[in-house]
Image (cartoon, rainbow, N blue to C red; front, side, top):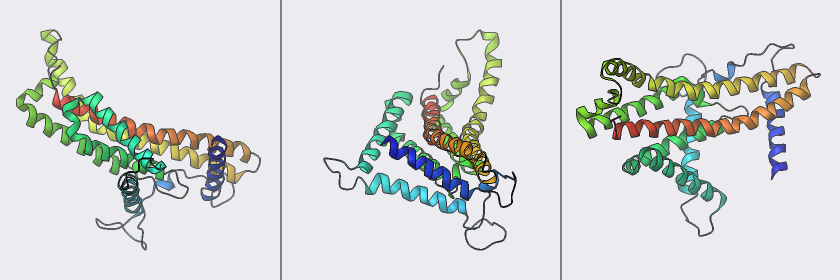
Length: 267
């Protein structure tokens, strides 16, 4: 299994060297070009309803998620297939995360959190396919996901606790003179949550893909440093597989932490 994984990584590295090669001789590398949003059909300006490469790869992420969670588990075999095993592991992993971090009363939000996790992790992994497009590298996508989480937990906080939700910003354990100052700091940090939540995911994914293209450009531009570059690409690919999962995990566990604050706001 280890050998198969190694040769898959090498093959991806070589393919990337061809796909990301500079158009002209020399070290003219544009690592950010891969994140350009383009119309899927024809050319011209992108409007509100224009189908783009982002649209297509987001749709593929949804289809892949449905295929994994619905189609692979439809038979519910006693001896599960690999796809069913992955789906069951993902279900159990996210369920335990929600229960452990946010509490048992947060289980009713499990479908929403599970959907977030599966969409992000699937989009991240699809983005590692050569010549694909990583939708989670765009702040426009991650910001929407983060804002949905922010609005959800805020609404839940006020609906469940009413004005008591404001206790989240009042640090009762601190000395009385410091409480108003800490309340302002807590309030600012609360509204900064969707910014950090979205930038963390998009920034890490974008940085990894940019590094991949730089090394791929080196490999294609110079035969002397090509072996070193291919080795570096293989190592970065392995790291990016780990990052793809970790960033989905971080986004999801932060969602659980924010949900816990909404359900139990008192310090």
